[in-house]
Image 1: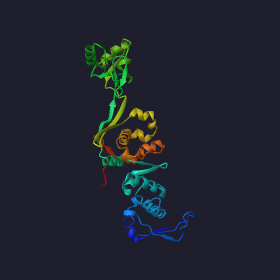
Image 2 (image 1 turned 90 degrees about the horizontal axis):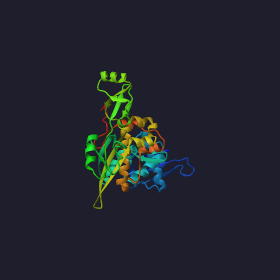
Image 3 (image 1 turned 30 degrees about the horizontal axis):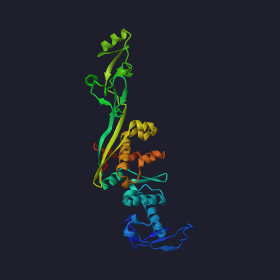
Image 4 (image 1 turned 30 degrees about the vertical axis):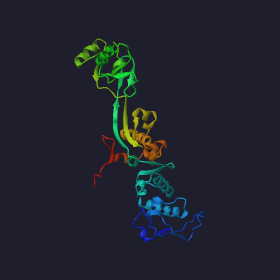
Length: 335
Protein backbone atom coordinates (compact mmCIF):
# COMPACT_ATOMS: atom_id res chain seq x y z
CA UNK A 1 0.00 0.00 0.00
CA UNK A 2 1.24 3.47 -0.84
CA UNK A 3 -0.10 6.54 0.97
CA UNK A 4 0.93 10.07 0.00
CA UNK A 5 0.20 13.22 1.97
CA UNK A 6 -2.42 15.57 0.51
CA UNK A 7 0.29 18.11 -0.22
CA UNK A 8 1.72 15.82 -2.92
CA UNK A 9 -1.56 15.28 -4.76
CA UNK A 10 -1.61 18.70 -6.39
CA UNK A 11 1.32 17.92 -8.70
CA UNK A 12 1.80 14.45 -10.08
CA UNK A 13 5.30 15.24 -11.34
CA UNK A 14 6.64 16.60 -8.06
CA UNK A 15 7.06 15.21 -4.56
CA UNK A 16 7.84 18.03 -2.16
CA UNK A 17 10.69 17.76 0.37
CA UNK A 18 8.22 18.35 3.18
CA UNK A 19 6.03 15.43 2.08
CA UNK A 20 6.39 11.94 3.45
CA UNK A 21 5.49 8.63 1.89
CA UNK A 22 4.18 5.76 3.92
CA UNK A 23 4.98 2.45 2.33
CA UNK A 24 3.84 -1.03 3.13
CA UNK A 25 5.43 -3.76 1.02
CA UNK A 26 4.93 -7.50 0.98
CA UNK A 27 8.30 -7.92 -0.72
CA UNK A 28 10.53 -9.88 1.62
CA UNK A 29 13.58 -8.23 0.12
CA UNK A 30 12.54 -4.81 1.34
CA UNK A 31 11.40 -5.81 4.87
CA UNK A 32 9.45 -2.57 5.08
CA UNK A 33 6.10 -3.79 6.42
CA UNK A 34 4.47 -1.09 8.52
CA UNK A 35 7.59 1.06 8.15
CA UNK A 36 7.37 4.75 7.30
CA UNK A 37 10.12 6.18 5.09
CA UNK A 38 10.35 9.95 4.85
CA UNK A 39 11.87 10.63 1.45
CA UNK A 40 13.34 13.94 0.30
CA UNK A 41 13.81 14.45 -3.42
CA UNK A 42 16.56 16.84 -4.49
CA UNK A 43 15.50 20.14 -6.06
CA UNK A 44 11.84 19.23 -5.69
CA UNK A 45 11.71 17.16 -8.90
CA UNK A 46 11.63 13.48 -9.70
CA UNK A 47 14.35 14.01 -12.31
CA UNK A 48 16.82 14.33 -9.42
CA UNK A 49 15.99 10.99 -7.80
CA UNK A 50 19.12 9.17 -6.67
CA UNK A 51 18.57 5.69 -8.07
CA UNK A 52 21.22 4.31 -5.67
CA UNK A 53 19.19 5.49 -2.68
CA UNK A 54 16.74 2.72 -1.78
CA UNK A 55 14.28 5.06 -0.09
CA UNK A 56 14.18 7.40 -3.06
CA UNK A 57 13.70 4.47 -5.41
CA UNK A 58 10.72 3.31 -3.32
CA UNK A 59 9.29 6.83 -3.51
CA UNK A 60 9.83 6.92 -7.27
CA UNK A 61 8.14 3.53 -7.73
CA UNK A 62 5.14 4.80 -5.76
CA UNK A 63 5.00 7.81 -8.03
CA UNK A 64 5.18 5.57 -11.13
CA UNK A 65 2.22 3.57 -9.86
CA UNK A 66 0.23 6.79 -9.54
CA UNK A 67 1.21 7.79 -13.07
CA UNK A 68 0.03 4.45 -14.45
CA UNK A 69 -3.40 5.02 -12.90
CA UNK A 70 -3.67 8.40 -14.66
CA UNK A 71 -2.79 6.87 -18.06
CA UNK A 72 -0.53 9.88 -18.65
CA UNK A 73 2.24 7.86 -20.22
CA UNK A 74 2.73 4.56 -21.95
CA UNK A 75 4.48 2.79 -19.07
CA UNK A 76 3.04 -0.55 -18.01
CA UNK A 77 5.05 -1.03 -14.84
CA UNK A 78 7.11 0.87 -12.29
CA UNK A 79 10.22 -0.76 -13.78
CA UNK A 80 9.42 0.76 -17.19
CA UNK A 81 8.87 4.11 -15.52
CA UNK A 82 12.29 3.91 -13.90
CA UNK A 83 13.82 3.06 -17.29
CA UNK A 84 12.22 6.19 -18.75
CA UNK A 85 13.45 8.17 -15.74
CA UNK A 86 17.02 6.97 -16.26
CA UNK A 87 16.89 7.99 -19.91
CA UNK A 88 15.40 11.37 -18.93
CA UNK A 89 18.29 11.88 -16.53
CA UNK A 90 20.83 10.90 -19.21
CA UNK A 91 19.34 13.35 -21.70
CA UNK A 92 18.60 16.02 -19.08
CA UNK A 93 14.94 16.21 -20.10
CA UNK A 94 11.76 16.75 -18.02
CA UNK A 95 10.35 13.43 -16.88
CA UNK A 96 6.73 14.41 -17.62
CA UNK A 97 7.65 15.10 -21.25
CA UNK A 98 9.63 11.89 -21.53
CA UNK A 99 6.65 9.86 -20.34
CA UNK A 100 4.85 10.76 -23.56
CA UNK A 101 7.81 10.68 -25.94
CA UNK A 102 10.10 7.90 -24.66
CA UNK A 103 8.93 4.30 -24.81
CA UNK A 104 10.30 1.05 -23.44
CA UNK A 105 10.43 -1.68 -26.08
CA UNK A 106 11.85 -5.09 -25.22
CA UNK A 107 13.78 -3.58 -22.33
CA UNK A 108 15.28 -0.73 -24.39
CA UNK A 109 14.22 2.91 -24.47
CA UNK A 110 13.40 4.57 -27.77
CA UNK A 111 12.73 8.28 -28.25
CA UNK A 112 10.43 9.81 -30.83
CA UNK A 113 11.46 12.36 -33.44
CA UNK A 114 10.19 15.30 -31.35
CA UNK A 115 12.70 14.55 -28.57
CA UNK A 116 15.48 14.16 -31.13
CA UNK A 117 14.67 17.57 -32.60
CA UNK A 118 14.65 19.15 -29.14
CA UNK A 119 18.10 17.70 -28.43
CA UNK A 120 19.42 18.97 -31.76
CA UNK A 121 18.19 22.48 -31.02
CA UNK A 122 19.83 22.31 -27.61
CA UNK A 123 23.09 21.38 -29.37
CA UNK A 124 22.75 24.42 -31.64
CA UNK A 125 22.02 22.37 -34.75
CA UNK A 126 20.02 23.51 -37.75
CA UNK A 127 18.76 21.33 -40.56
CA UNK A 128 16.91 21.32 -43.84
CA UNK A 129 15.17 18.65 -45.85
CA UNK A 130 17.09 18.63 -49.13
CA UNK A 131 15.13 15.74 -50.66
CA UNK A 132 11.59 15.08 -49.50
CA UNK A 133 10.71 11.57 -50.72
CA UNK A 134 12.16 12.60 -54.06
CA UNK A 135 11.63 10.16 -56.93
CA UNK A 136 14.75 8.75 -58.55
CA UNK A 137 14.92 7.74 -62.20
CA UNK A 138 17.10 5.68 -64.50
CA UNK A 139 19.75 7.30 -66.70
CA UNK A 140 21.74 5.79 -69.54
CA UNK A 141 24.61 6.60 -71.88
CA UNK A 142 23.18 4.27 -74.50
CA UNK A 143 25.10 1.26 -73.11
CA UNK A 144 25.07 1.36 -69.31
CA UNK A 145 22.14 2.13 -67.01
CA UNK A 146 22.50 4.00 -63.69
CA UNK A 147 20.09 4.94 -60.94
CA UNK A 148 19.69 8.64 -60.26
CA UNK A 149 21.63 8.67 -56.97
CA UNK A 150 24.37 6.24 -58.00
CA UNK A 151 26.28 8.00 -60.75
CA UNK A 152 30.01 7.30 -61.03
CA UNK A 153 32.41 10.21 -60.58
CA UNK A 154 33.08 10.40 -64.31
CA UNK A 155 29.39 10.74 -65.27
CA UNK A 156 27.75 13.97 -66.40
CA UNK A 157 24.00 14.44 -66.08
CA UNK A 158 22.28 15.63 -69.27
CA UNK A 159 18.71 16.65 -70.05
CA UNK A 160 18.26 14.53 -73.17
CA UNK A 161 20.03 12.24 -75.62
CA UNK A 162 20.66 15.19 -77.95
CA UNK A 163 22.25 17.13 -75.08
CA UNK A 164 24.40 14.11 -74.15
CA UNK A 165 25.52 13.59 -77.77
CA UNK A 166 26.48 17.27 -78.10
CA UNK A 167 28.59 17.23 -74.95
CA UNK A 168 30.19 13.89 -75.84
CA UNK A 169 31.27 15.27 -79.22
CA UNK A 170 33.14 18.07 -77.43
CA UNK A 171 34.90 15.60 -75.09
CA UNK A 172 37.66 14.58 -77.51
CA UNK A 173 39.59 12.63 -74.85
CA UNK A 174 36.56 10.69 -73.65
CA UNK A 175 37.10 11.73 -70.04
CA UNK A 176 33.44 11.42 -69.10
CA UNK A 177 30.26 9.57 -69.92
CA UNK A 178 27.12 11.58 -70.56
CA UNK A 179 23.90 10.25 -69.08
CA UNK A 180 20.35 11.15 -70.05
CA UNK A 181 16.95 10.03 -68.70
CA UNK A 182 15.62 6.69 -69.87
CA UNK A 183 12.34 6.98 -71.80
CA UNK A 184 9.42 4.72 -70.90
CA UNK A 185 6.75 3.29 -73.20
CA UNK A 186 3.59 1.24 -72.81
CA UNK A 187 1.78 -1.08 -75.20
CA UNK A 188 -1.99 -1.50 -75.41
CA UNK A 189 -1.86 -4.46 -73.02
CA UNK A 190 -0.43 -2.15 -70.30
CA UNK A 191 3.05 -3.66 -70.47
CA UNK A 192 5.77 -1.11 -69.73
CA UNK A 193 9.09 -1.00 -71.58
CA UNK A 194 12.26 0.99 -71.13
CA UNK A 195 13.82 2.61 -74.15
CA UNK A 196 16.82 0.26 -74.13
CA UNK A 197 14.52 -2.78 -74.17
CA UNK A 198 12.98 -1.92 -77.53
CA UNK A 199 13.75 -3.95 -80.66
CA UNK A 200 12.64 -3.77 -84.27
CA UNK A 201 9.45 -5.58 -83.24
CA UNK A 202 8.17 -2.35 -81.63
CA UNK A 203 6.93 0.82 -83.27
CA UNK A 204 5.94 4.11 -81.65
CA UNK A 205 2.43 5.30 -82.46
CA UNK A 206 0.51 8.49 -81.70
CA UNK A 207 -3.10 7.37 -82.06
CA UNK A 208 -5.35 4.33 -82.34
CA UNK A 209 -5.31 4.35 -86.16
CA UNK A 210 -1.52 4.07 -86.22
CA UNK A 211 -1.70 1.32 -83.60
CA UNK A 212 -4.13 -0.67 -85.74
CA UNK A 213 -1.93 -0.29 -88.78
CA UNK A 214 1.17 -1.39 -86.81
CA UNK A 215 -0.64 -4.47 -85.51
CA UNK A 216 -1.59 -5.44 -89.07
CA UNK A 217 2.12 -5.49 -89.86
CA UNK A 218 2.84 -7.83 -86.93
CA UNK A 219 4.47 -5.00 -84.96
CA UNK A 220 3.88 -4.09 -81.32
CA UNK A 221 2.48 -0.56 -81.09
CA UNK A 222 3.73 1.44 -78.11
CA UNK A 223 3.30 5.00 -76.90
CA UNK A 224 5.38 7.30 -74.66
CA UNK A 225 4.52 7.58 -70.94
CA UNK A 226 6.08 9.57 -68.08
CA UNK A 227 9.25 8.08 -66.64
CA UNK A 228 8.63 5.57 -63.85
CA UNK A 229 10.61 6.16 -60.62
CA UNK A 230 12.95 3.34 -59.66
CA UNK A 231 13.37 4.58 -56.08
CA UNK A 232 12.52 7.35 -53.61
CA UNK A 233 14.90 9.15 -51.28
CA UNK A 234 14.60 11.46 -48.29
CA UNK A 235 17.68 13.40 -47.27
CA UNK A 236 18.41 15.91 -44.51
CA UNK A 237 21.34 18.27 -44.21
CA UNK A 238 22.46 19.11 -40.65
CA UNK A 239 24.69 22.03 -39.69
CA UNK A 240 26.40 22.80 -36.38
CA UNK A 241 29.28 24.89 -35.07
CA UNK A 242 31.58 22.92 -32.76
CA UNK A 243 34.45 24.76 -31.10
CA UNK A 244 34.40 27.40 -33.81
CA UNK A 245 34.36 24.86 -36.63
CA UNK A 246 31.35 24.44 -38.91
CA UNK A 247 30.30 20.80 -39.11
CA UNK A 248 27.94 19.37 -41.73
CA UNK A 249 26.32 15.94 -41.73
CA UNK A 250 23.75 14.24 -43.93
CA UNK A 251 21.11 11.69 -43.13
CA UNK A 252 19.36 9.82 -45.92
CA UNK A 253 17.22 6.77 -46.41
CA UNK A 254 15.66 5.31 -49.55
CA UNK A 255 12.69 3.18 -50.46
CA UNK A 256 15.01 0.50 -51.84
CA UNK A 257 16.89 0.36 -48.52
CA UNK A 258 13.59 -0.20 -46.76
CA UNK A 259 12.79 -3.01 -49.19
CA UNK A 260 16.23 -4.58 -48.68
CA UNK A 261 15.66 -4.51 -44.91
CA UNK A 262 12.28 -6.23 -45.44
CA UNK A 263 10.50 -3.32 -43.75
CA UNK A 264 7.52 -3.50 -46.07
CA UNK A 265 6.55 -6.85 -44.61
CA UNK A 266 4.88 -4.66 -41.98
CA UNK A 267 1.54 -3.19 -43.04
CA UNK A 268 2.23 0.08 -41.22
CA UNK A 269 5.37 0.71 -43.29
CA UNK A 270 3.39 0.18 -46.48
CA UNK A 271 0.76 2.70 -45.38
CA UNK A 272 3.17 5.34 -44.06
CA UNK A 273 6.29 4.79 -46.15
CA UNK A 274 6.96 8.49 -46.69
CA UNK A 275 6.74 9.41 -42.98
CA UNK A 276 8.75 6.44 -41.73
CA UNK A 277 11.48 6.86 -44.34
CA UNK A 278 11.67 10.55 -43.34
CA UNK A 279 12.02 9.61 -39.66
CA UNK A 280 14.78 7.12 -40.41
CA UNK A 281 16.74 9.60 -42.56
CA UNK A 282 16.41 12.30 -39.90
CA UNK A 283 17.54 9.99 -37.10
CA UNK A 284 20.62 8.84 -39.01
CA UNK A 285 21.81 12.39 -39.55
CA UNK A 286 20.92 13.51 -36.03
CA UNK A 287 23.00 10.77 -34.43
CA UNK A 288 25.92 11.73 -36.65
CA UNK A 289 25.87 15.48 -36.03
CA UNK A 290 25.12 15.46 -32.29
CA UNK A 291 26.17 12.17 -30.74
CA UNK A 292 27.30 14.09 -27.65
CA UNK A 293 23.68 15.10 -27.01
CA UNK A 294 21.75 12.13 -28.38
CA UNK A 295 24.04 9.38 -27.07
CA UNK A 296 23.11 6.97 -29.84
CA UNK A 297 19.46 6.57 -28.82
CA UNK A 298 17.18 4.83 -31.29
CA UNK A 299 14.05 6.45 -32.64
CA UNK A 300 10.89 4.72 -31.36
CA UNK A 301 9.70 3.34 -34.72
CA UNK A 302 13.25 2.28 -35.58
CA UNK A 303 13.42 0.34 -32.30
CA UNK A 304 9.99 -1.17 -32.89
CA UNK A 305 11.17 -2.52 -36.23
CA UNK A 306 14.42 -3.90 -34.81
CA UNK A 307 12.49 -5.55 -31.97
CA UNK A 308 9.87 -6.84 -34.44
CA UNK A 309 7.13 -4.97 -32.62
CA UNK A 310 4.04 -3.29 -34.04
CA UNK A 311 4.38 0.38 -35.01
CA UNK A 312 1.89 2.76 -33.39
CA UNK A 313 -0.14 4.03 -36.35
CA UNK A 314 -1.80 6.76 -34.27
CA UNK A 315 1.51 8.55 -33.79
CA UNK A 316 1.98 8.61 -37.57
CA UNK A 317 -1.55 9.71 -38.40
CA UNK A 318 -1.25 12.66 -36.04
CA UNK A 319 1.88 14.09 -37.66
CA UNK A 320 2.54 16.08 -40.82
CA UNK A 321 5.93 16.44 -42.50
CA UNK A 322 6.41 19.96 -43.87
CA UNK A 323 8.54 20.80 -46.90
CA UNK A 324 11.40 21.89 -44.63
CA UNK A 325 11.38 18.53 -42.86
CA UNK A 326 9.56 19.77 -39.76
CA UNK A 327 7.07 17.30 -38.35
CA UNK A 328 4.09 18.90 -36.61
CA UNK A 329 1.09 17.46 -34.82
CA UNK A 330 -2.27 17.77 -36.53
CA UNK A 331 -4.82 19.82 -34.56
CA UNK A 332 -7.71 17.97 -32.99
CA UNK A 333 -10.71 18.44 -35.25
CA UNK A 334 -13.00 18.38 -32.22
CA UNK A 335 -11.31 21.39 -30.64
